[in-house]
Amino acid sequence: MTSFAVESSERRRAFRFAISHQSRLRLTLEGAAGGEDIDSVMLTDISQQGLMAAGAGHLVPGAQILLEIPLVGWREVEVVWIAENRAGCRFTEPLSFDELRLAAASNERLALEFPSLGADIAQLPELSRSAEDDEDDADIDDAPGSQPWLLPVGLLVLALIAAIGFMIAY
Image 1 (cartoon, helix red, strand yellow):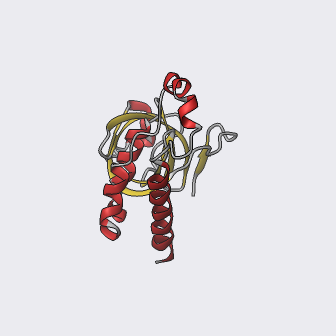
Image 2 (cartoon, rainbow, N blue to C red; image 1 turned 90 degrees about the vertical axis):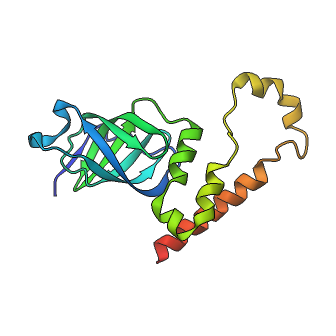
């Protein structure tokens, strides 16, 4: 069991979606230990800042790789740590909320066990707004009922938590 770490003070700060998605990766020359080719990994969780991948034990910390993110496309990531057969990676450019929403909605296990939930997540409205919009709407946002998206989003998050709990229990 080999374990490496880079920037051990770096801790998860963002909410991560548990996913199960087979993904492809492209290595740079320094991206693999011993020159072994690695062409696929299993993504196990994802956030706007990074992800964890299983089947990636031959990568080395500090490696820059291109990784195919479901429904998003190829994104550059840096391998931050390796533990056994898992790798923690940080996106060079964080995912947007929409990209994260699409990647989370593509979860293969979630799609099999809860077919409509993934589609519901994919249809969530974009919650990120520019600071200018926030300033312009400051008076409107304070009014009761001015955030009609809050209830559906809350219900979907609750359903997602219940689904993940169900998957863990079984």
